[in-house]
Image (cartoon, rainbow, N blue to C red):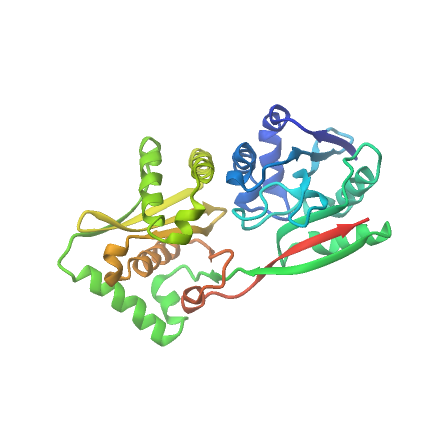
Length: 340
């Protein structure tokens, strides 16, 4: 494999088409690995999460010139102050990260990558610190084997829970498959708001021209929660605008709102990607809390996902109780650490 290193935003931009083509073939095909998402992330360094970072994306090409693998990395002190090579997108706002390579090429790519990183050409890293890798990812075992061949220390740490729901493709079948009490609660809450006598509607944003103002309305609802208000720094707001614009243009953004009496009562910011709904963030208007607007909109989204034959409803990181009450099946993400 021919190893090349990308260290500027201009070089990164030039890879866009090849990058996304490889993501489509990758053992890990998730929205957070798309070129448009990671480019937006790099522009703000994760909404200000990182203040010191040098781009260090390592690619590998086969003899015919085709792209075989991408290690989307950056060089920075990690949270422990060690000089680290981390995955672009980490840590806080990208739920699933990984190396980008087809399953058949992942192990040889990791071997070539570690050979490069062992050479004087690489930055003076002390640790490979890779966060938010799904428990099912073949990267975890392949990285362990490649690292231990070199006598390097490999460890893995469990991180957050990530419940998901396999969808049967039919709303009533889905409801029949969850706990009876929860099924009754979903129906009761939807019925209560629909029979309230107030105008009720939900919609998915379709017009790019309105996306900016719709996101501001989403932020306004998020800010009613103190923790979320503190999270929404100016840099983070810019990050969300960039990433949602990029996802909208690429065709996989789903920004949904529930309105009650003409006012926004709840919102969900999701990714509709690869026949799966990825639930990224949510907001509610406390003025409508008596109607459980978050639950109601979640119910509408689950019905939509079944009717539109999505295969999975992925709640992503976080073990909030409601995710399991809606039928979430547990899995986790991990932090893989290599020290030489």
